[in-house]
Image (cartoon, rainbow, N blue to C red; front, side, top):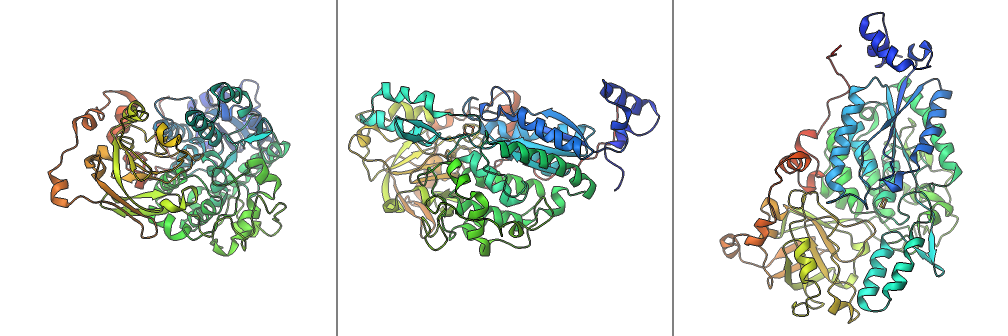
Length: 571
Ligand code: FES
């Protein structure tokens, strides 16, 4: 093994080495600094990231494994957003978490890192950081919570909040009963138990190769998660010895496998922006069209909410993620290596489906083709996406008149106005929700339906937006419209009453307004006012540098990496 990176801080008899060692001693023997890999445990848990608040316990198991294998474990708290808690939207803070993690990985005397994440933005942020620093890195996902029940009915986090709140608005559930369900929603530690973004990113990261195969999806309270954390701690020490950095094994083949997995599990559309951002950090040419090309024809095999019925602990007992991958083994790229040094496909032999109601066999899929479709056309020249598996089949080809909302606030104000002219054939358009415009690209594309439609029993109409959609949501929603309205995309020029055509099979999204008429239009005042540029702080930096959704909404100066070298020393 070459000299450890940390030896640049700790080896030698000069004053700097003395300072680095002395301040770390605090009861630690000098042998800790003599050729032993220093492994950071990047912990995104905090009381304000409730889905990750148990990660201190997981970190302890990682530490035990690192120490047992001869390394020195060092916990490193990473500031990260709790999806349900932060304003104005968690996505605004993903890049901040990624940037702060990257800088701390690079600045500190560490040789490798174990990444502890769970809640939606945390695993993506950690992987973006690790890719840019390119130190040996492996993820331990915090795992989903156990299923809560209300009146004998399983509750899916997120999905059932949307469903129940729509029932209240439709008048089929009392507000008191809705509030009674609140204490049953989150049954245990862990992240959301639907196939939302957190579950998706854990499983997709395992398909990518950065989690030990078989670990993702282990429920947070399950003792086997701590055992896996212990083994991963041991592995982290090996990774340093073998110099297995992200750039040594992550290729486009790994992203191919992640996209196949994303489709087979019916995963969140948010995985598109996150995978694009991670690939961008690695210098791998991945485009939104790859998601359609690789994933569109992959069958849906996992019967989990929001596309299906069950929840994450059901997936685990039914055989787990590897059983899903085994069904689509022929679609996976056999050359893609994992963090173990072996190809992903080599880890699938012993996987079995134990409950075919939860994981359906390949010859009886829930849906024959379930991947994300990429749409282009006069309304989305840079592309937009839709998840047909979560949409109403009868709306996948549709022509309707636009009902336009200029912001989330405008939507809330007018949604239930009895005068709003809208019916089941209308197309709801919401703009001002892209990376720059909101700013931060919130999960609002799955707009609630007007009360007067809900009362008529209508549960889905076509919706179009430049924002994102919660992975726990469902509906015929076209999202990530690029360019966003704030960047001058055609979305900014749509007017209520314009005809819009959606044709998913033809991959088209068109605004039926003649080009000469469109070019004569200017965005209306309310739209422009909504784009007031932030004056200071992170929001200012973000708006000035954020890329569009088709580039993963990363910051332009964070694409790529800078490695782990730091030449200067201030002491
Ligand atoms: Fe944290 Fe859903 S809110 S995973």
